[in-house]
Image (cartoon, rainbow, N blue to C red; front, side, top):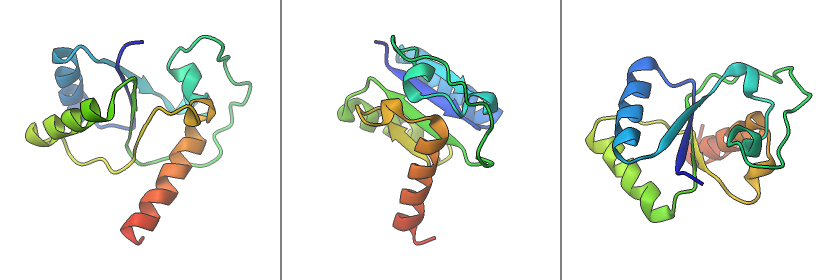
Length: 124
């Protein structure tokens, strides 16, 4: 599996900068669109055995930018995030990394989990 970054609600300029960095590092970049938020992370990553969700109604508005990293070691992810800082990619607080647990989550569920964690950590 290729190292992959999934982008959700990333502004055009930031998206272009992330894609430039990813291309140099041979990392695949894909976008999650609003009509895909009910899909599992496994499906969005094109993992065999994950089927499209019959659910299509978006539960709530998901309005924050989100980055999802797949098939990277912790060390690789730390290096990539450091490159983002050096290249002045705006800070995106909502992010997650592929795990054996979250691969089955619909994107909106993962988003809500990350949102709740961020609010607890930041005191919001």
